[in-house]
Image (cartoon, rainbow, N blue to C red; front, side):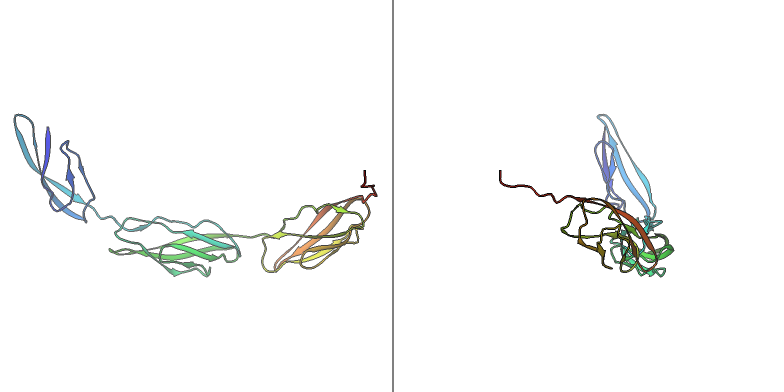
Length: 232
C-alpha cells in the first residue's frame, strides 16, 4: 500500500508513503487535505477535514520560588503556546522593588519578609495575557558563622576575624565576656591582642544588625610556647 498527498490544503503538512501525516500545524482554522492510496490492483482517494484549534498563549509560572529578605533574587518566568517571541512586562511589582526584563527574568533585591503578589504580562504576535504571581519572602535571620576560634600560641600576638550571615544592614560586634583572655573585639568583628597562657578558654560575643542581636560562645585553644633547642 502506498499513500499520496494530492493536496495539502495549504497546511504545509506532508504524508509519507506509509501513511504518516506530519509537520507543523498551520494557524487556527478548518482545512481540507486530499489523499489517495493504492496497492498493486486498485486505488482510492478522499478528502480529509482537519480542524486546527488555537494555540493559546498562557503563563505557565503560577508562583515564584521563595526569596530571602535583603538577598539577591533571580528567577525566570515561563509561558506556553502562542506564536513568535515572548515579550514580558511588569504591570505591578507588588511593592517588591523587583524588575522584570523583556525576556522574562525577574531580578533584584528581595524585600522584607512577607507575602507579595506581582502582576505580569506576556505578549506574542497574536496577543497578550496577564497573571498575578505570588511571592513568599522568608526572613533572612542573623546568625554567627564562626563557631570556634583558631588556635593561639601563648603570649603571642593573636588576630582573627569573626563572620556572620543574614540579617539586615551593617553588623556591629561586641565582646560580652573575654573569658579571662584579655583579648579585644572591635565593632567590625576583629579579635585581637596577646594570647593568654596555655589552656582552654571561651569568649562570649554578640553581633547586631538593624533588627536583632545574637550571641554565641566561641571556644579558644591556646597552645604552649615551650622553649626547645632547635639545633640537633
